[in-house]
Image (cartoon, rainbow over all chains, first blue to last red; front, side, top):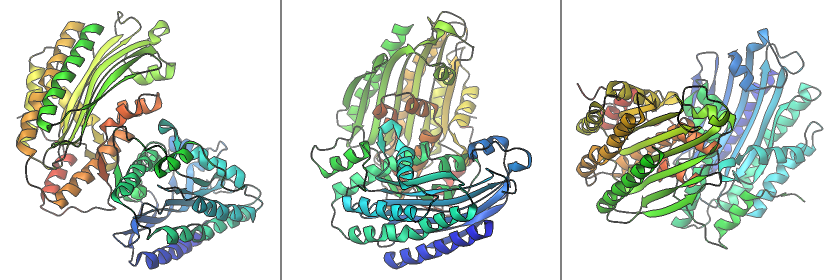
Length: 302
Length: 302
């Protein structure tokens, strides 16, 4: 399974980056890096192209021995001990921030973990998900994104869209702002179900569905007209994205505390973010429509 | 002491804001707010003026009963119990972000805490400090800032500049970047020494020295010429400021987790911040000179 997952995430990274390069009319920068404690990764970043202000697509394969504290933080449900401090993790992680404020930011992450040799019950699991963060609300975009993810879930017995949708709303929530990060998507963790192959098939299907979930939205929005005030609103929303990632996101905070590759961990941050004191939204505006949805998650699929 | 400290921080807020308004050729916005659980504050913010991109000067007087967990996080040294869960806190807190990249950001905070009735040993303490965060290094600025603070410390037996300087370097450190937030200043906490009056006199002297420590620097730098590339470097440095405040700063993280007034807590964030993937500094440049000092704290006073 380790090799199967490694091959899959590298293949999907290639596919996605090829597709993004064509849209962005540019090539990405690639950094292959090693981790002192074992393993490494391949980071690819777009910036300065025609469509993406900043976009990162990262794969990593890391392994080693966990400190007991880190082991606890890493989770995995069951209480594992002794040689189970050895771990293996591989995954694909991407965050795309387009230039155009009408085009939403998107995030996806699919990962596989093992503790010890990964044979015992509870010693292996999958996690992942994808979520969409628009600055302006286009309901058809949210519906398309969710539909694609629901279709992927529906093709697999191990998956449950309704559950993962709610989990996503709960996870990508900014308590101190009392609002969601975006219009959600799916989120799942500790997925172990009946057997590895079924779980892998689902995760692979999700990863393969990414382009289909996002590209039609990007195509519709990337060349829309916008003004400075709308760009500033996008930057304010990106400030909230920074708040979520630095304060709450488990992957980010875990990475910062465990000597991860900083540039790959913080690749998810936007190029520019903005904080205005007591910013006020005009009643009846498009900005207010967006915020109302962030305050109260919507079921995008009836 | 409660009333003495309350009066002092309000008076200093007035003095500082009057002085900033004159320099900025503008008036500040004032928000007086109340806290559901007890107390409130007075926030004043400058933005859009001629000198400050964003500048906030806040005073607060809050009290109530702590959750045991919050009590622990709040610190105060001694293990206090029972009615000592009642608390009182008042302080002055400011962060000034100038437009001009040659003019440094500055932060200062002076505060007084009580637990219970504040009579027992260890049930009251002062804390505070001030630190300077330039984007470009002017050694004379760092020396002036530190000298003013050292002079304030030297006028009081309860204070120790050398200790507080080192404490500041340790506190305003960004571990995941392996660099300091700026060129430091002083930081102290749990100051209780022999008696309240001596501690208060020191803290008052520090607060009264703020304008003297910062204004001469601001005057020298606020009208210097700069280009876009230097403005971008300032925004990158402000990204690091955001990283420190959201990930490590105790006041900020405590505030976010305890239902503080969000706009006052996050007043410290800059208007704009920037994150470039793998930004590289030109060897021998002014940016490199700045970074070298952040990597290795300097003793500014021989």
